Length: 362
Ligand SMILES: N[C@@H](CC=O)C(=O)O
Image (tube, rainbow, N blue to C red; front, side):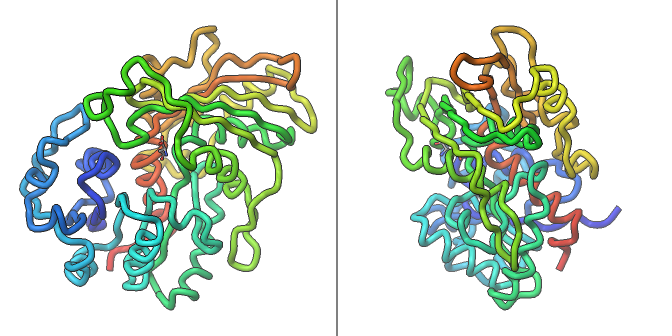
């Protein structure tokens, strides 16, 4: 068995960074060798830097407790020489994240990012490995632009879209043309727990900054075509969304209405969902769900409490498919926002990048 790739985590102390650590603890291909964060945490051990703000339900893994946290800016040279690639989960203004990700990529360190800063950079692939693995092709053009041989940036989309985009993707041949979605988003999407956000107990807040635009536009980029080293976003379906914060810890739910060019039967839709698979399933990537989509027949499913951890939080649960008086159909989707929607989705991208030879040992 070949040696594991050496991974650094930029922004390791926040909620998504913590998720990365738990997912990578016993990863068969990757080993966390370095943690970095802002100057505030630098120089401390990971345990000191987190300082009681460990938000996972499992205990902090022993292997990270005493690891030093480096300054992702000042310790740049040390980080670059120590890793084969990095995951980026920093919490900073967008322009600073863009500059940081590009700085690492230009220093020949591939960056797999959870952040939105580069989601609309034309030669940066934004990937859900089951949906658009072919977008990785634009890495070649990106490397030319950056002047690199190994370094590049690859990003994952926003967590909100993962509860309905895979469902629509599986039905592409029927031409979804108009989609109305309302998302019911968990508080961990904002990096918080109930203890940190007591206002959310027994409450609903009908606003998540920037979320509706992401939810409407990002699926179109996933369905875009690669032309001349760039991703050209699709122009259909038209999607309109409302995004609502609800008192749930983990799990984004979406209630969706859809019209098709060619209306399928209910049986056809369920068959497409149940049989949908992609490259991660074919390659049996370590974090790939065996069945990406499950369809639940019971009227009261999917439920966050029962279904959010389907396929270790990497699968999507669908239910309540029925004909509608105004649209062709309506249904409900659920996905885990910090697993499939954040760190887990990024780990799966890194596995695909390794399997396709884009990230290698130095
Ligand atoms: N912006 C989302 C997090 C997804 O990445 C949210 O606030 O739930």
